[in-house]
Image 1 (tube, rainbow, N blue to C red):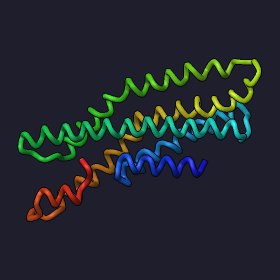
Image 2 (image 1 turned 30 degrees about the horizontal axis):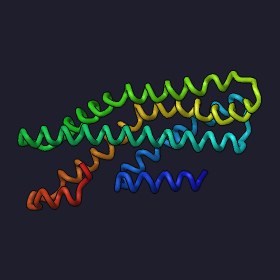
Image 3 (image 1 turned 90 degrees about the vertical axis):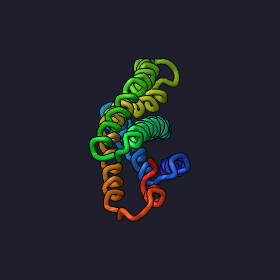
Image 4 (image 1 turned 135 degrees about the vertical axis):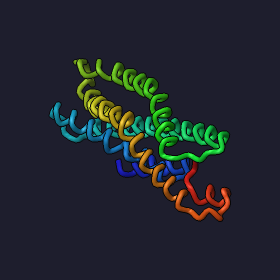
Length: 192
């Protein structure tokens, strides 16, 4: 599992080329794993290879939805930056807030569709009684619990963390000397 998390981190960094965005997505993994752990304990399952496989699959899905969330938030922020630039204004806290709301709202339906599809596929496994059902239940339980907690995280926590990170970057840009060119500011600033 640690090797899997390291590989996920490296792939995310290669995708975003930003430690801040990579860490935002990586924060989704503990939240997803906590939900899987709670449901695993509720069912009385011990840690086994099958449960570890379920957690690895859950980590992949949680990272995927976190990546999509950050991409939508970045696209909304770029759109607000372009609109403000056309008006001759810079992005401030209000513009950042509007961009985050816009990006967060765009991702609600796809996230809910993903969660419903995964749950619809995994819930029948929980009631199965045939050959191999005990192993399949141990794979499904972490994913079901993790999808519930991951949904809450993706819809609420990631936009909040994204806002904090971008607000810090905006504050750093605002405190730069006015003599520096916009090219130098964009080279040192965040990837908007």
